[in-house]
Length: 406
Picture 1: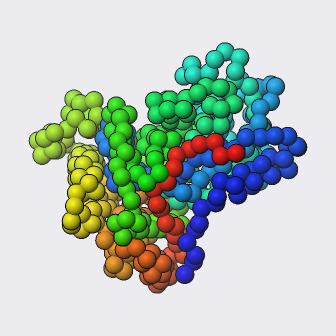
Picture 2: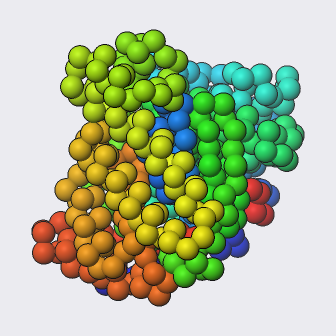
Picture 3: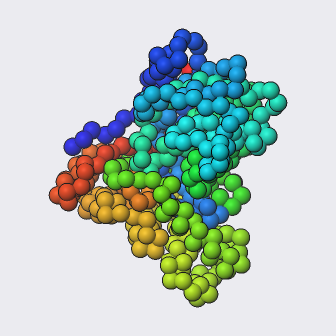
């Protein structure tokens, strides 16, 4: 079986990015920040519907080494991409405009653009910068590698420009909002705010209950080791993208339903059966049913986490119901995701479900402590038997948020 993907230490990530910066742009001091990817325990496609979700921060992080320049130029290099890029901050604009930034640099300079556009940067503070990026967050796995990049840059710029926003949760919420704006407007990906909130506002040993209607959060203790559990992440290696139209189509269906039901978001739907009867399009009805029932599953999942005996069985049942809803009503699963869930469950997982936006990416399985490698081996064998590419695996203890690390 493939080895479980381990996270880099802060020292290793800082050394990698500083070395890359010096090799690419010459000697000089740089500060390093890091931000985690995230995995969502439950609450999928609820964030842009004003709903509830329950992500946690991964130990796997994206690192950025950043140093200031005296002009408004940004020079960029990545350990995952060939060559270097250069962008004029004054020329940056939304996707589709004359100032569009193509490729991964949009997620970096988009954050700088959004911080300025939000009025969070005092006049004269926003200089250009050189930045090197490296990451152990699996790319394209539905574990929010893009938000990890944005949030690492946000913390770095907060420090560089003296904004002071990373010092408390209220400021981090503002940084998260700027990162969402960067992803939506500059990178052109119509995602909600869960990923950035998890990366910036989660806590070690806790899942983050995020109310996407008002941005309120609650830290929910999630000590897997104490409960005799592990959370196994299964990267199916199936292609995953959020800018190919499918994600946007789901969001548009939900917004259409909200208009037809005369509510601000689907969070306001209280009479599910009555609301479904008012919607003519059967596809839209299925989308609404998923969102409303998924929000209820988040509430029940949190209740089970804080309850006593028998909670593991309840958690597993809720995970299974979430996956079924995502597969049948929201139609964002894939053969690889379905097989990962089925094989993990057959191998003894208490529960399993796809996580993230879907259309590929990753699934998660709640498994007894010490069984992760055996479960992973059986999932890998199932993939081999089906003729799929070999999956990758990692463990996901609830970890710390974005911060300066060097």
